[in-house]
Image 1: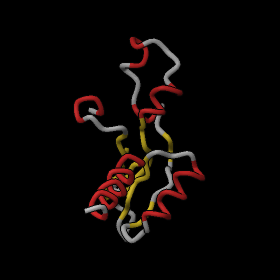
Image 2 (image 1 turned 30 degrees about the vertical axis):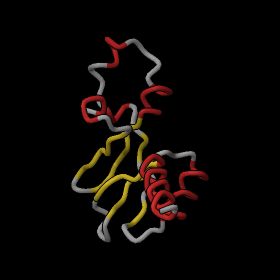
Image 3 (image 1 turned 180 degrees about the horizontal axis):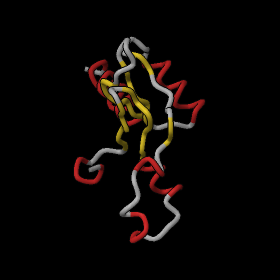
Image 4 (image 1 turned 60 degrees about the vertical axis):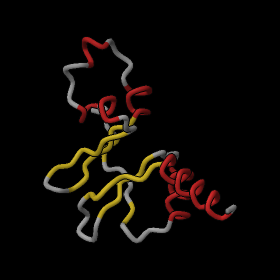
Length: 106
């Protein structure tokens, strides 16, 4: 899924709540096994359980601080009930900032 969609992570959701996140980093650091053994294992064996999340109203600077302090590159975004609505990544923030800088130079 991640390769097909060109995305760096996927959320693992049960009953509309985030129970984990599986990232490129999880694949690189935690999958210390052969592909034949890995391909039949559930994502739950390798995901980061109960990842930190941010609500929809969180400021970009707070997201960056959370990523920096936690060593994350992705953070799930949740609504007021804790249901996942998306994921923000370092790449998303860099694109946003680059776009703002480009527009300010015009």
